[in-house]
Image 1 (spheres, rainbow, N blue to C red):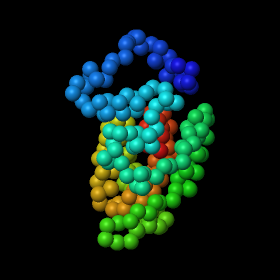
Image 2: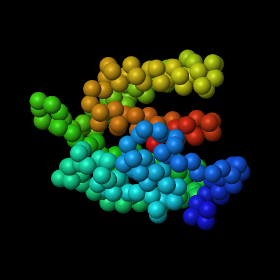
Image 3: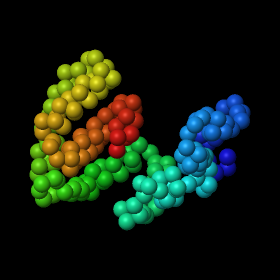
Image 4: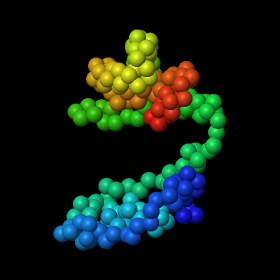
Length: 198
């Protein structure tokens, strides 16, 4: 319990009724014992005891699917950024800087060369989306935030299908739209929702 750094998480876990651990062999009767072993190792609450992704891929249950030559190990993720306790204004600055430093990833397309999104095409997509979103938000603001958000989500799907055929354009335009909404909103529920997408 001491390893859980979030006081809210510790409080929640302590509030749960005490229960005995169930044997997965009883829960999943007839399942492959190797699958049960892997599942138990993956669902270990203690992160220091939990099986790593690399170890899971090398587990006997996945042996026939494993291909070590096609399973590169990434470097450890630095999550110190997410642990910072900062005021909302500072988070807005950091999100804005992240948008400014956005570099579209290039992926090879089937039957052709990778197509990099230029800054001008990203801004064109953003400007188109921005003006349309502004019209939608203005038109539907009388219906309340959640109704407006549903309309925005429906619009986004249409926009993606019609304007953004390249995922890099989508990433750039969507990031800029989120940043704009974050910087202009005064509604804390909108801000909370937006920051979950960032």
